Length: 584
Picture 1 (cartoon, rainbow, N blue to C red):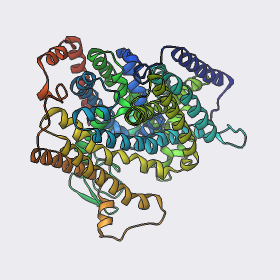
Picture 2 (tube, one colour; picture 1 turned 135 degrees about the horizontal axis):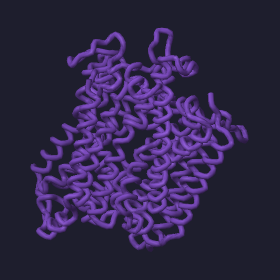
Picture 3 (cartoon, one colour; picture 1 turned 90 degrees about the horizontal axis):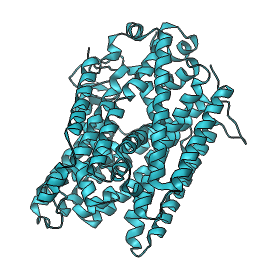
Picture 4 (cartoon, rainbow, N blue to C red; picture 1 turned 180 degrees about the vertical axis):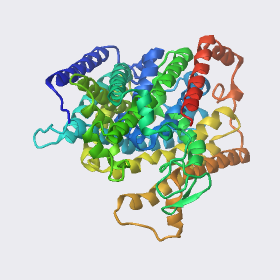
């Protein structure tokens, strides 16, 4: 296995120096008001907005997980990346209402649209979800990357997992606490560049090692490049009909995701994430107007198409190199005695390509890209958590607090997030089961949030009673499923009695359960709203399509031109073309 040479370490050190210099420059800008600190003074241009959204989304877990799925299932997971159209829903449908309301957070928008209690509920749920999922997942994936690529790192009795995690958490937390969203956004713009360059280099050198695109296609076969071909576990017939596998009834899409779940449930989670999640939307809120915010989402949507080619395809390349025997070490680690792929080992496909294919010097650039992915994700969640806590909790309990005090409270909140991140390390180290378990949390918490935001904007008749009822029912169903799953997923040997109620709940495929929550929450939202008094329409003026004034409509219409429309259409063409190309 290739190891990092002196030049690689120099490149990595240079990366840290540039990030530190950029962060220092941003920190010295004006950050003495809440608008400056939490929303970068609402001065972020479209390019910074777009790259920041992309960098926040792409973490080390994408490089590990997507490349691993490419090695095992081909382009199947590309469906999620081709949900880039969700960003257009943010830019064209949702963002005008957010910008118009002048809010700092998504829960604050719910307060304006429905009630203060709705804001408190969403803020609390979001904070807990960020702490127990995004921070934990980011640290775990980063630790895995460090342990694979830098196994020789040891310091004061700590291995590479600890050293890498602590280093990145502390550095990221430092500039996030001091510089706020402006520091996060500008460093993420640079990190996007490093990440994309590094990943493209892996793709280029990987294709060269295998002998080009045609040779790759010849070795792995057409099935690996087919988005729609059902890829099912061994012994299960590929079918559109329901099949029973390990006690779970599903229309299999592949061994993880069934057809119906991908077609109907995945977009719900995608729209929640891209259009209502503070972690993503905060970057667009930092734009000065609708025009810059919308163009930022369009730019981010185009960038979101890249992972299919710079993460998934390298995973397929790793499988091809292993299958062909071109690199014996890869073959030994990824291919079993029957010639099939070893799924567990395939998760390290991207790091193994870096180790076995890239030349000295290039490895340093790619490792810097991996660091960029981890740092950008952590910076995003640190900043989102501090904003939620300060603006949705502290400022409401201390309404007389000065701007400077709120900024300092935001910095303290960020430091607390850093401490929580450090405390997470021993909990999650080597715990792949916990990592996979946490990934499913958003599927249970997303539906009620998406339902309330999306339908709340389209239908002015929906009221606070309907919103709170949908939240109550939805979060109860989600937390109940998590409570049922927790012992079964985390306690070895634990299982429910076959056929019992809890067994049925646990064995409903998680995407189907998410879809069930969505349907129930929608019915509750509309049912309760229409059974109670309508909201005061003057109070929600400009916050729904039915309450827009003539001035609102004119301003929104003047915020876009033919360029924005053309680029949005081109994005749909690009997505459609990708589906056509990756269809057998």
